[in-house]
Image (cartoon, rainbow, N blue to C red):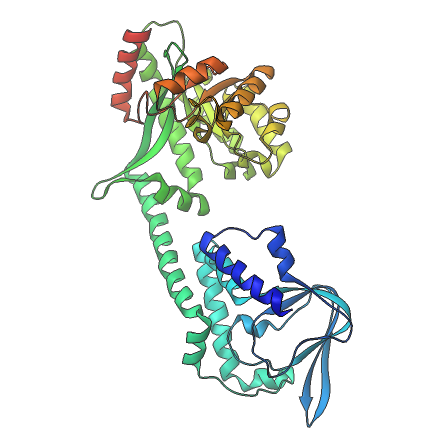
Amino acid sequence: MQQNRELFGDTMKSQKNNNMPLTNLQLQELRCSYPQGMTLFREGEDRNCAYIIEKGEVEISVIKDGKKVPLVRLGEGEVFGEAALIGSGKRSATATATEDCEVFRIFPSILRDRIMRLDPLVGLLMSLLVNRYRKWRYVSPELAAEAGVVEHAREDLSQVDKADGFLSDLNAQKKVALQELRMAQNIVEAVAKGELGPYLQPIVTLPDRKLAGFEALIRWHHPEKGMISPVEFIPVAERTNIVGQLDMMMLERVCEIVPDIQKAAGVIGRKIYVSVNLSGIHFDSDGFADEVVEIVRRSKVDPAQIVLEITESALMGSPERAEATLRKFKAHGLTISLDDFGTGYSSLSYLHKFSIDILKVDQSFVSDIHNKNSKSFDVVRAIVSLARTFNLSTVAEGIEHEEDISALTSLGCGNGQGYFFSKPMPVDQALEFVRTSVAKYG
C-alpha cells in the first residue's frame, strides 16, 4: 500500500503541473483492494485521504474505555474518512473491511484541483462551504457528541489553515470569481454601447484566389483599453450564457453588412457569403432555430449568403435535436459549416449523420502541410477525400505561406483563409478589400 501511495504522490504532482485529467493508469493507482478483516486506517493516525467504497463493506469504530465500539457499517457508494479533505490532524476512528472490498482514495490535492477548475463562481462557493465547515467542526463540540466520536486534540485553526493550503486556494478563487463577474457585467455593458462588433477575414478560392466570402469574428474595441482579445471575454461569455446574446448580435450585424459587401463587389456573377459562429450552448435552447431564421428573414438578406459555423460540441449533447435544428436552417436556405474538423473525437460520424455543407480544416493541420512528408499532409488529404465523397466543400484555415496554397491545391482543397490573404479587419477595410480583390482576381 505504501508503494502505491508514493507512486500516486509523484503522479499527482505531475498532473497538477500539467493540469490534465487523470489517465486510466493513474485511476488504477487511486483504486485499492482490501481483504476481509484488513484495517484501512486506525484511530490516531495522520489523515491523508478520504475513501469511496466501490464494492464491499467497511466498519467504522472507535475505542472507548479500552473497548472497540462499532459506530456504523458502510457499503457501496458510501464515503468515509472525509475529514482529511477539510483539514489535517489525526483520524478520530478506525476503518476495517468487514468483507472483501475495493475503494477509491480521494486526496486533498484532488479536491482542491477539481474546485479550482470549476466555473470560478461555483469554485468560490464550494471553497467557502468547505472552509466554513472545516472551521465549524473544530469549534463545535456538538458535532463530535452527535457522531459519538472521541476527539483526541483540537488543532489551532491557524495551524490547520497553514497545513491544508485551502485558504490560499480560496483567496485565489475569490479574485478569479470577482474578475469573472466584473467581466460578465462589462460584456453586457459593451454590447449596449456598441463596443463589440464583427471583424471580417476573407475566404478565397484555391488556387485562383477569387473572393468567396468572409468569416465574421467578434472583436471588442474598448474606449480606454483598446482591443480586448476574444480569449479574455469569450470563455466568460460562454460560462455565463452571455454568448447567446453575442451570437445573435453578430448575426444581425452580418445581415446588415452582406448587402454592402455585394454592392462593393459589383457585377461579378456570384454571391459573396459571410459566415457567423454559433456557440454549441444554443442547441439546448428551445426557440433557437426560430430566432436565427427570424433574424435572417427580417433582414431580407439572401439566406444563401449566410453561413452558420458550428463546432462538434454543438452536435454532441443531443444529436437528434441538433440534426432537427440543422435541417430547419437548411430548409430556409442557410448553409452549415463544421469548424475545426478533424480535431474532435468523433468527427467522421458527422459526415453522414448531420446536414453539413462545408468542412473547415483546422489550422493545426494546415500549418505543416507544405511539408509533404508530414502527417498533417496525409490528414488533410484524407479530409479532402472524405469531403469529396460526401459532396462537401472544404475551407482550409490558417494559411500563411505560398507553399501552403500549392500543397492544398494539389490535394483538391477548394477554399482557404489565413494571414497570407489577410488578418481579420474592420468592415470598412473589408469593403475596400472586396473592391481590390475583385479588380485583381475577378
